[in-house]
Length: 227
Image (cartoon, rainbow, N blue to C red; front, top):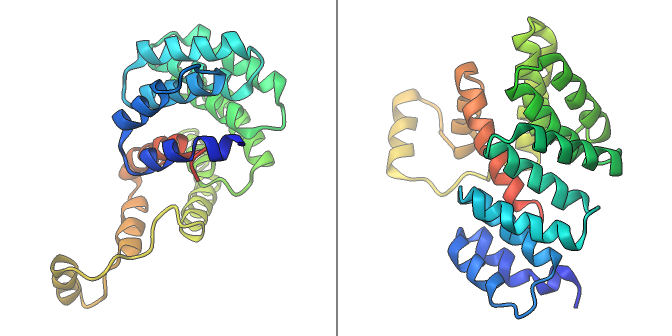
């Protein structure tokens, strides 16, 4: 049985938002291997249980010390625990082990941004986008930094690419069946309202971009192995 088949029940629970049940499923395995510990660390981190997540991540890396996904996950946990030097060490090692993988670069860029190293973060985001030019979250995050540096036109181009790519790839889901509230809104504005149009309005308001895309980024991170 390959990993996708083995963990299929786990991913169904994650997609349903049943994280406690997902943890119980992982704990039911008699002999947890590195992948089991890694999945535990991801779920625990998403539940804000960072100390327990770190213990699980350490267990995964004891078994597979050069696994890029496991290093990136532990770096993310270190970030949440504000152990930034350790986070950098894990991200740097992941980038060195897999220079063609955009995800460790993006994580390192995010950490650099949060610590105020704006230009260095831009460089990492640009490297990540060179490897994955259709990543909507990368385009949005780079746009925010370019805007901060005063490069308005460059920032706008990345915002537009982020929004267009997100809609095309259906990060935003198709419109749900009509509801009384949406119909009321449509009658008042004279135009039909769908979930897509509501989200489009949200992400085009500059003051909402960071909060909204942070939500998207976190959701996509947990779903990386479940789709």
